Image (cartoon, rainbow, N blue to C red; front, side, top):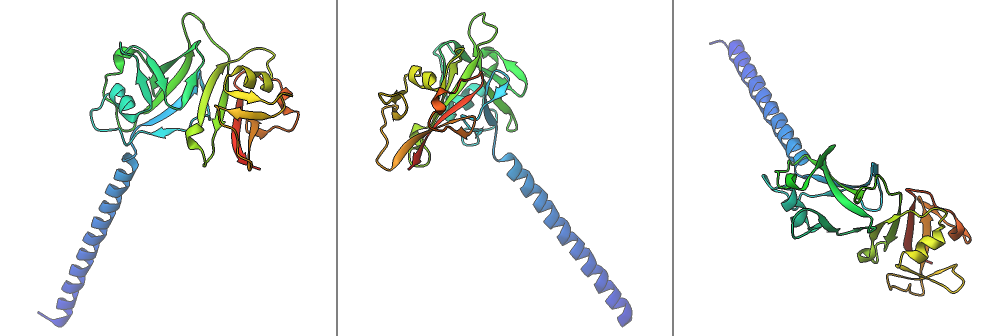
Length: 235
C-alpha cells in the first residue's frame, strides 16, 4: 500500500472517530439537559378565584415526589397541606390561611379535582393549583390579601392571609380587625404583629400592592384583590 493511501486511510479513521466522539458528547448533553429539566418535580401555585397571588411563592415539590405517588400523598408528604380525617377537604395549608367563608380546592393544570381524584398518580411535570373558593352556595366572596413578611431575620413569621373584603374598609380597619396587629393608641403606628414587638433598630412598614405607605397611608380605602403587606425592616 502506498504512503499516500495509508495517510488517506488514517485521515478517514480520525474523522470517523471525531464524529463518533462529537455524537457521544451531544448525546450526553441532551441526556443531561433532560435530566435537569425533569429533576425539579411538580409545581404548586396558590390562587384566589382566578387570580394568582404573590403572598406565597410557587413551590417545587421535588423533595416529596416519587414516580407513582398520588396527589394526596405528595401534598401530605410535602408538609404543606393537612387533610381532614374523612379525606374530603383540606384543613390547612402551611403558609396561607383562609377566611372562614372560604375553602381550598385543587386543580391540576386547568382540571378541577374532586376529593375522589386526589388518589390519582401525579406526573413530574404537573402544575398543581390550590385555589381559595367560597363555601356553600355563595358564587363569590370578594377578598383582600394580608401578607406578613418577617424578612430574612424572621422567616418563621412570614404568612399570607386571605381575608373577606368589607366595603369601605381602610388599611387601618383591616389591620385592626385582622386580630393579628396591635396599633398604637393614636392608631398610626404598628406596635406588635403576631405578638412580636420590633427591636429598637426594627420597624414594621406597610405596603399596598407593592407601594410603601406614607404617614397617613393607613387611611387608604381598599379594593377587592388588594394586597396589604406588613414587612419587618431595619430603621
